[in-house]
Length: 281
Image 1 (spheres, rainbow, N blue to C red):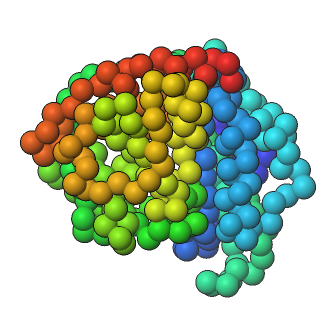
Image 2 (cartoon, one colour):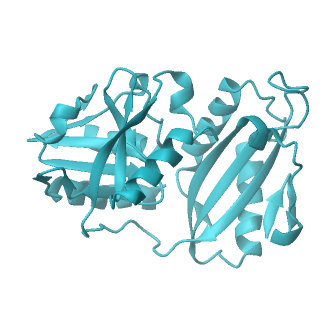
């Protein structure tokens, strides 16, 4: 079952127009949300990021789009797909109503909510080999648009194809200033000694929910020093650890970048604390 504009419909009956603006112009934003036993993880953060993304895209936010209303709609969908007692991932996609060319005919929106099962309720540390490389064919342009989850993901798609063709698990993306910004599917953290560093949003990093929660965790830990600062490609091979964060994986340690192999001690420590934060909501 899929939620299409507030109505539950069978997958095969959920249809979009060929003039859909998300398809035609990427005029769309989305949230990927983790649900555990019917409970939406970090919903307040997801909700406010979704609202901010819609405002940045100059979309008209419906009066009905309260946190309670949207949470109720997600709950109905989870239950309709028999996932109320299972871990699941939701994709909440908002797109402007069709009409117009680059200039839209309206700022009103439609939306789709989809759900799929997840294997594990809480985050587990993946200790399998995870080799990455820089993707240098195209760059992320730093600025406000880069921080939101829009459907404009050409760089991520091309980077994923590059990774697949060259047997890498992931790639790191650069901005126009040649600073490392993030991975293809999440935020980047660099560990050197007791310092944990992550690229700032001003460099074009996605305003990730797991990134935000992990920053909150690290700030409360006196044994670590936190930096939000630009990351040079030269820093990567000098690091003790590299790891990626997103809402589905939690924390993914990087085991190899070029000739350097990495530990996962800090990632393991932080993952246990992130799970505690997730349980507390």
